[in-house]
Length: 444
Image (cartoon, rainbow, N blue to C red; front, side, top):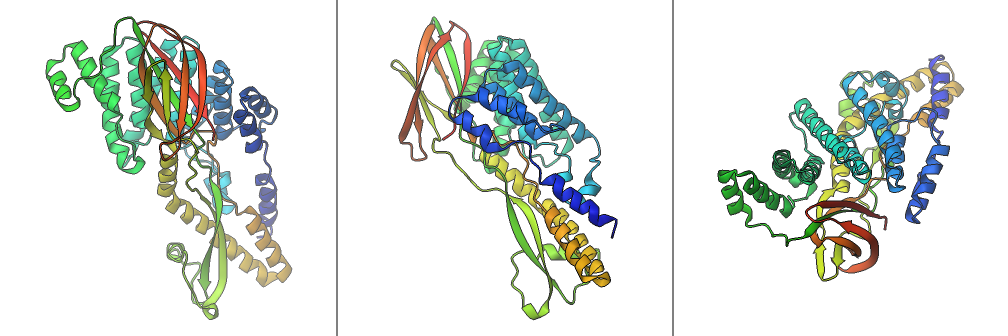
């Protein structure tokens, strides 16, 4: 017990230190100066930069048009995450003594998938479409790995990544691979739609009809045509714009304090006590029966929708509304809700252990008991790590445009479908019979 106390106090000091402040990252992003956010992150890099930092650095670099640097940061995060998914977590024991913040952060599955979206776009902006196709194949391999590891896999993010892969393969003229990706996208959107509330985008059905016709797959073509109808035709000498509109921020995790009553009749050292204690969340109790009120801290996440939740793109008389393809907020909340019971179990195991340590210290000396209890409280912090600069939602606008250079007039909708903002993006080049990819972000 005496040996454990200094360890707890040292850990309390360590986990209280932070290398960079999130507000200092998003302030320059929101004022159109992503290069300043990138510089800030570089100057305030942690001693051992971990996955969340690399994700933030990669996305900020992407918006600052530092595409090679962005991909490097995402690659580092991906390598660390892959290593942690395939190896035992060495700090599990430490986290059970102190805090979940000591657990190696392996990133959520949807975070890992979305990193491939930005990596693929980095290659597109560097005019390296082959590199983007490599990212599509890596994303597909990652999805297959997740599916193989978990029979109850939730397919969060897989529909969007497969849809993205279909578009990139189509842009490269790899028709068979494009068709396979679009088929997977249709399946994955269906698998996840109940929890994500994102339906399969109609364009996927159009692509299935278009590609089966091109490839001469008569039976499939007729089936898809009957199911989805005839896709829109493109006039001659036109190209295509595919715009990804990213809105707001994914909600960040906060900390929630919970109280659990320990009664005088409880056998705290019983191995079944913690599962019993879990059932007492929010329980009313009589003071006379109370031995101790156990306070714990766990993560919490709440909806935080942005002001803008839709887009219209107008180019001359042509205009198209965006279609929701990825609801990152819903995915983040559903992912956390699935993890919460295990987080609470680990937290209570740890808290009960600290309570027993305090009780033992009290028997030796009251001051030692108070100090031990203080150390336990200081080290009880929720693990709120996540990729915070991710958008809240992603929409897609796919529209044919005449070959040439265009100005895109963007109108942004609120939740009621009313226009509450506009911007223009100039000098967008469209080549005949080619696809031009672009992503655009708002933060409101």
